[in-house]
Image 1 (tube, rainbow, N blue to C red):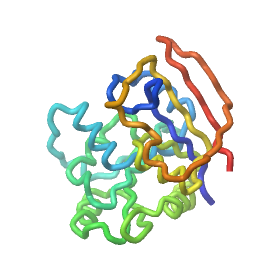
Image 2: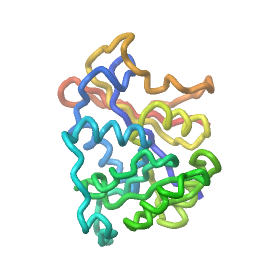
Image 3: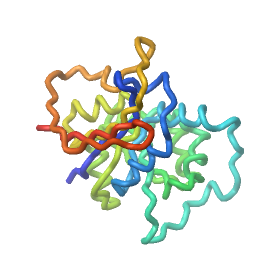
Image 4: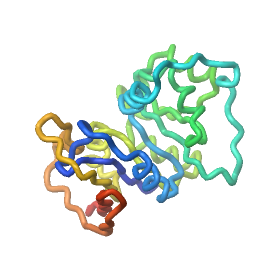
Length: 222
């Protein structure tokens, strides 16, 4: 069975995900309000976040090789990091250390390099193998539901991953935090990679937030 999946992102008024400074407090506050079991993030988005917010990569310590103890009452979400090519090798401990992350689960494919698998196993990271050359997200989400009991997953990623999820019919809702700014032609459209046309939406929430931000929530009509 597939978990419910919500796409969540901060955008400019002209639907760009770059070229402006997002309000991270509002962004993550809105995301956490859904109480997701897991956050789904693409490797490129995850690596970009590290480059933006980490001045230097901290070295691994002995405790980074140990799976953290999970308490049943822990409200934090797991992080599902889609990384079939090993882009995040040497960086996963940064996410595992995050106060917002319960632990990391990596989504890989049959073509994932053996050296990356060794890296994951040595550090006791769980992984889900689904797909041949690339991650099969439908299969990966079904396994996540079966293995971990995930009922709700929120995708906090960029245009490539979110476009795949929408085109494959995996998305139930789209949550957008609209920033009061226009980026113009230098921006990167959140939905610019979608090749499928005519995806219909139903507005289910329209809320004005502090600082002239707007939170929109749409249901994806099948």
